[in-house]
Length: 282
Image 1 (cartoon, rainbow, N blue to C red):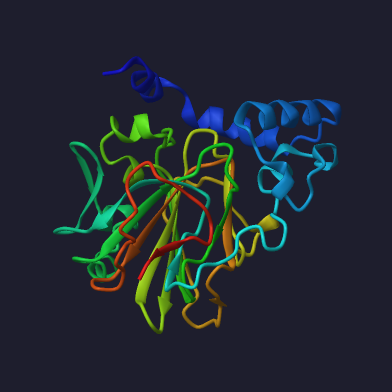
Image 2 (cartoon, rainbow, N blue to C red; image 1 turned 90 degrees about the horizontal axis):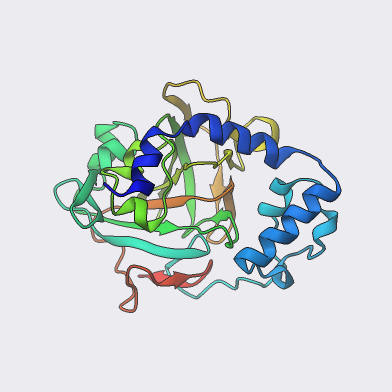
């Protein structure tokens, strides 16, 4: 086993993540500004496309990290499905016998990914999936790939391994063992679909725009048990391209679609950079 992977198994990931979350919320004045400046230079963050490009105005690192973009910075393609995030394609393709391909030699099941709900997972038998990785430099708000009505949300506790490509290639079942938030929608045109927000080391929080908590943050707290919210009796309907959530520090989104719904673009391949609003497929 690679040393970098072994260290992840033995590192106190929960403690590191909790500490990172507190630091990211800390209003440290010039220290915060200096760290943001270092981060922008190291990861080549394009502040010209941010609604607020002045790094000195961000009181916390989280406010910088979840910065909104200027209007029109991510035009939506005229397409049935658009990319919901900036990032890179980790994997995509068909769900075969309930199995989702992670990396060479590694698969995980749709049922495990979504928290064990067999009835929900059955909707995606022989369907399709896309796993999209957000690097530190990327815009970290998540938007809708198509129109959808929110049916339910489930918080699933888990590990906090890194989700970078090296870890995905070496940790079995990575995306189905990390902490995650499963958001289930229904579209009149495309049936049910799921967006899974996957946590990772130092991902301090995940948030959805509808969650009724301070700043819409789901975690922390981390209660160590599955939590479920039913929205089927509420009319929470989001349009294609509309924001649905965000990462407070970065991670991965996994999408599941029903059989025969989505044909991916021919130019898609693992490792390909993507941007919010680009055509994903039909």
